[in-house]
Structures are given as structure tokens and as C-alpha cells.
Amino acid sequence: GILSELGLLVYKNHTKICAGWIYETNSRSVLFGWFISDRNLEKSIREEALNLLCKEGHRICKELGYEFVITYSQNTKMMDRLKAFNYIEADKNVIQLIKKL
Image (cartoon, rainbow, N blue to C red; front, side, top):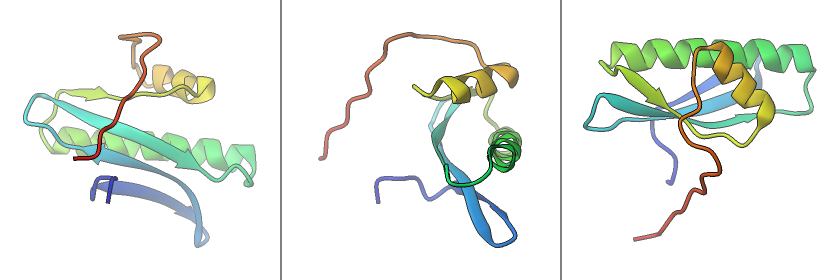
């Protein structure tokens, strides 16, 4: 598949709420992102789940030995959430490209 095998999925009462994936590198940095959430659920439930996803994702990245987490987002609310977790903007107006090999 195109997504990493190292993914996190947050449930509440057997309902999938949100997910994110961790991509390991051979550097001190790890990629954590490709966040999704069920927009049909209550905002407060999604927010709580996304905060848990971030906390657990960061814990796992640190346990794996990484010093920096890199992520990409165009979603303003997600960017604000990440900034609340001490992320800083490194680049603006970045376009992600992909090529199938």
C-alpha cells in the first residue's frame, strides 16, 4: 500500500474517529501525518481524539529514537492543533509531489 504500516487509529465505543501514520527515516527526523478524521462525528469527540492521536504519535516517535517530527497540512484547524503541540512553520506554500516507481 501507499500508507506506512505504522499507523495509529483512535476509537471510541468501537467507532473509528481518526488516524495518522508514521514514516520512519534514517535520520533524526520522522514523518507523522496523513491525518484523517470522521467529520460526521461531534466536533468535541474529534478534537479529543485528534489530541490523543498527536500525543500518542509523539510518544511513539520519541520511543523510536527520533528527535524531530515533520508533518504537512493544509487544514488550518489541524495546523493550529499542531502549533499547540509546539510545531513551528518551516515552509509555506509547499506542494507535495508523488511519483509511482
